[in-house]
Length: 331
Ligand code: UT7
Image 1 (cartoon, protein in one colour):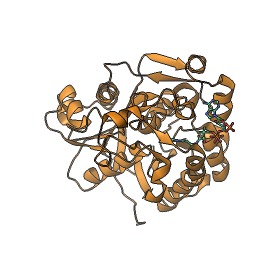
Image 2: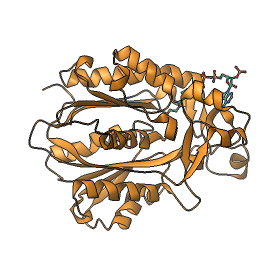
Image 3: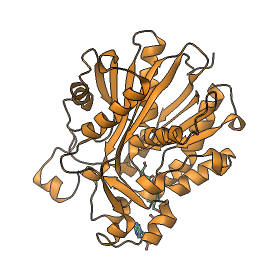
């Protein structure tokens, strides 16, 4: 068996949830010095959804989770483990997983939050799968959810046009046949930490009047540096994941990449030699929703009938840290 390869775990239910309020490029033109044409040509984004003031990450998570559970035919009491993968937890503690557990009434579940930036969903699937592969648990609820609108500097045009809010959830259960997760490829490179971060609010720079005045609790990003990393890491992770499953890019039926920038997705597609119809894109509707990006895309791919039984699906993502993660599944 290849290193990193696991068997016997598949996604049995998917669900997504987006907040009601839509923010278009035209709306952003009224807020900062930007243009619809710049945003569309540089990123592919046209609109994104923004959570309300009483809508934290846990509330989007709960709604996505309920839909995924319904599709899997699973009751909350059957859940053994809840993993909420997010960079925007409701609070430092309790974990968002605890809040979701209480909201669902999942009285038999363990749970925790996981943070690996935008590849969060892939990381959470990798972690959740281990519990099922070892036989410790039979039902894991994995949620990728973020409310990035809450940590954006709405006066910084370099970042505020890029992000949105949303949640996606998946139910993982054992699978006796050859479907499910075939392999994972995960990695981090902390030397890229400077290029995408929230400098304050943690133990390095606790909240103070000065930190708030200097907007240090919002996203700080060097876009071009992150871009260079992204176009390399997304296809590399996909290729490594395929190799661990004993496959090549020719075997891929559908690539579901992290939706951070249409140009990054296009560069990855070309590097992998895939035709456009084999790459799922919905960035125009949601912007970059970080950990929710892949589970929301995967849910939509299923709704559109693109996930056929037996088809080979590859998820791939990059993010702050730097982090990257990809996995190969037989649907
Ligand atoms: O999940 C991971 C999250 N992060 C990412 O994925 C970010 C990866 N990077 C990117 O997607 C791209 O680097 C950006 C979309 C952020 C920027 O695109 P770019 O082609 O790399 O543009 P740039 O940063 O080199 O900026 C080009 C110009 C600059 O003006 P000058 O200095 O050339 O006069 C910017 O000030 O575009 C300007 N600019 C804008 N103009 C209108 C930057 N943001 C905007 C804006 N509207 N919103």
